[in-house]
Length: 255
Image 1: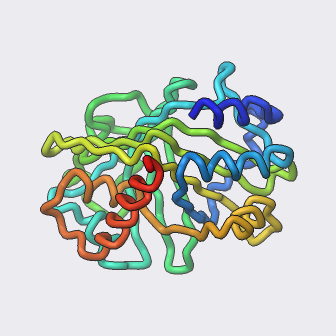
Image 2: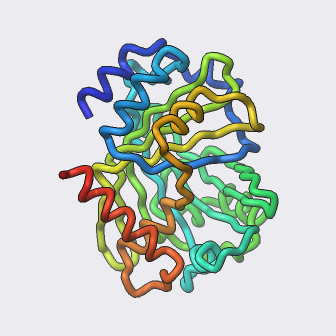
């Protein structure tokens, strides 16, 4: 990771305030799963076309997210069973900026992701916050009384923005999971999840580099993969191929 951070430190900075025009709250997301070595090669090729977000002098920011679900893991099962329209409920804490948000991510049958959120105080169960409960009642379809904390995902994020400010790239490293219902933990290190967020199909230097390196999009949900890795008994037939590829890629990265 040290070499990766050195490359990012050499990129032009962008502040949180300057990022305000690149929120992309209604967007198309494209994920990629790469090793740290591949990430280094990618960054070397795009470093002169992207800004690196800087928060209080840091370009690697810790995130912690608590996902909520029903007792039957309905939101997980809906995703597993390939429903096009689906929702996720989470509470995300941006550790560096000391901000916590209750969020609903809605995926439409057109492949568009729309995110709604409100700022909240970090408490163990956000459902006990009246404002958050009212927000969730309005913005997602599940009875709030059935929702409870299920999975923590924690990672360190690098955020890049292209010079035209038409796209944002998040790079999640050191990804680990904790299942709050059974206590199991798991990790995806040293793999890296990259996510390109765009409102449309604009020209992208990153996509050109990925094409040249023969790195293809890789659809995955951190919530679903974390659920599978920490709960082997959950329904996961659809994700077994992805889990095998993750293990193979981890072995290649260590080799």
